[in-house]
Image 1 (cartoon, chains in turn cyan, purple):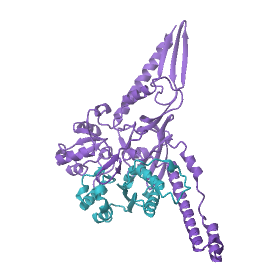
Image 2 (spheres, helix red, strand yellow; image 1 turned 135 degrees about the horizontal axis):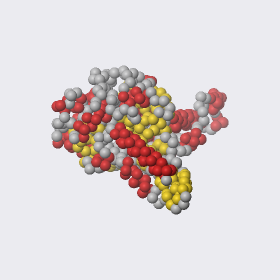
Image 3 (cartoon, rainbow over the protein chains, first blue to last red; image 1 turned 60 degrees about the vertical axis):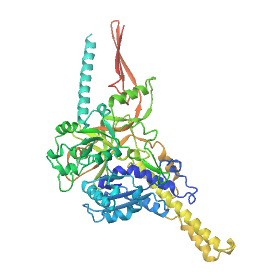
Image 4 (tube, rainbow over the protein chains, first blue to last red; image 1 turned 180 degrees about the vertical axis):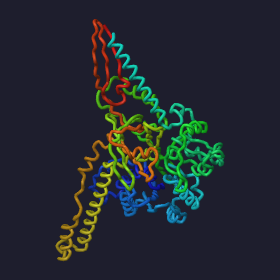
Length: 149
Length: 409
C-alpha cells in the first residue's frame, strides 16, 4: 500500500486491523497472562503468508497521522519476527524520487514478487505516477496489480 | 369544515415543500446515474478490467463514483488535453471534478461545469466497478491459492454501490412488517441520505481537521474489522451550492479506538518488561545451583530489579480495555477528515467555515435506531371526529413517512 499525505487515511482502518492482529499474534508463551480484548477476536480471514507493506510519504512529521502507532507496530513485528507488517516512510515537502525509486523498492519487494497480489495507491498524482513508474521498473510482473483509491 | 380545510391546506403545503427539498437533495448528489439504472450495467472487477485493457490497450478508463467510464472517444477533444486523462487511467476522478485537488503541483485545478460534465460522462459509462479486491489472501500452498472474500455477516448488508433509497425503504418495511417495534431497533445495515448537523472540529494533524457531525436518532458504525471499508467514501453535498465531494471513510480515527491502541501498546510494554524480568531472574537462579547460593551482588541485583523494574510504567489496564469494549460498535457522531488547504476551495472551504448546528447533506452508512412516539390530535366537529396521528420519534419512520389521519363519526 502506498499513500501520500491524506492519501494514507483510506488505509488506516485496514492497518488498524493488522496492528490488532500483530498484538494478537505476539507469541503467547511470553505473555500467558495477557488478557487483552483482542485475544477473543477472530483473525481466521488472514492467511498464513499474509504480509502488508505500507509506504507512506508525508509533508512533515506533524502531518503524519498515527505515525507513532505505525512505527510501534513495525518494531514489534520485527522484534518477534512475525513478518506481517513493514512500514516505510519519509517526510518531504514535494514528492521526489530521492527515496521512492526503483532501487529502494527493489530491495524491499524482491522476495515477494510472486506473492504480491495488489498494489494500492492513493495520494497526489505525482506520487502515484512516480511510484508506479519505479515499481514497474523493478518488475513487469507488477504492471497489472495497481489499484487506485 | 373550515378547520379541516385549513389542515388539508397545511398538509399539501408541507408535502410540497418536502418534495422540493428531496428533489434538491437528489440533484445535489453527484451520482451520474440513478442507483436503479446501475443494476443494468455490466459489473467489472479488477481482473475483468485488466483483461479489457489487455484486449484493447488503447482504451482510457477512469472511475467515477464506482462507475467505469471509457473516455477513449473523448480524449482527443478534452479541453484539458490528453495527458490528464491518460495519467488518470483507472483513477477515481471525482476529486478533480468536484472542485477537488489539482492534478499536480504544476497543473492547477479547474472548476468543471458539473451539469454538462454529468451529461457528457453519462454517455461513456460502460459498467460498474466491483471493488472485490479487498480480501486477504489465504495461501494453502504456493500452487494452490485460496482467498477469502471480504464479507462478514454484519457488513454483508452494506451495499455501497447500489444504494437506492426506495430499495432501502422496502428493506426496512420488510424488516418491520411484522408490527411496530417501539424502542431501539438497531439495524446496522443501511445508508443515511440527508441532512446532518455539524458539531465541532479538531485538528488531528497538521492542517488536517476532524469534523464531527450528528443527527438525533441516528448512530454510525465506528469499529469494524477494517478491510471492508478500505477505499470507501462517504459523499457530502452542499445545501447551498451544487457541489459534492467524496471523503474517505476512516472509522478508526476516533478517540476510543486510538485510546484502545494506546493501552494495547502500553500493556504490551509492561508484559515485555515482566517477561524480561522473569528471564533475568531465571538466568540468575540457573547460574546458582540453589537459591541459597545466590551471592550478595546477585541478590542486590534482584532487589533493585524488583524495586525499580516498573518505574515509569503503570499497571496493566485491563479494566480500561473492558470499558472501551462497551458499546464500541456505534457512535452518535460521524467523523470526517478534511484537509484545510491554504487556498480554500469548494466544499472544503464550506466545511472549514461551518459552525455548530450548520447543516450539510450526507450519504453515509449508519446504524438505524428506530423508535416510535405516536401523538394524536383529535378535533371534534358535531358528530364528526378527526384524528391526526404523527410519529415524533426518530429513525427511518420519521414524521415525513408516518403521518396519517382518521375521520370517523
